Length: 154
Image (cartoon, rainbow, N blue to C red):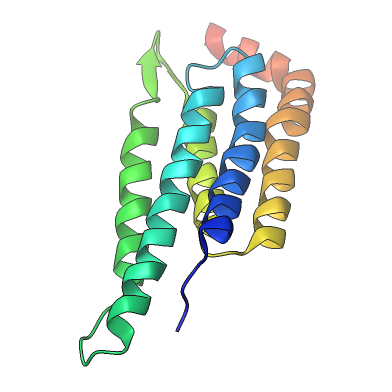
């Protein structure tokens, strides 16, 4: 069964930190409350739980024990959702922090992908997420600025 070397574990954790950090850097430069460190930690945590899950599953797979590694993934997703919910605030009649919450959730997925060794998938997810939060953020601000401003006057 699967037994990862220490170097492979470091590669998976390092990739999660790096890719999570890219999205966190964008959030940091945009002045959002959950920035570089938060995104790196979420990605690292998700990758760490993924690696541990694979190792535990490999250890019990040879026994007659029934193990379901997807239950760990479900727990990770729920925990990351809880973290993301903490970044959402309601102030002055509007809701703020939803994009940051979503980026935390996506970074958890990136960490999971790195933790199980899906590096190309993690890289593609990272690039797509960066495009969404940076490029689409600017597009949205440029084209919908007047809509938001008018909505506030109603």
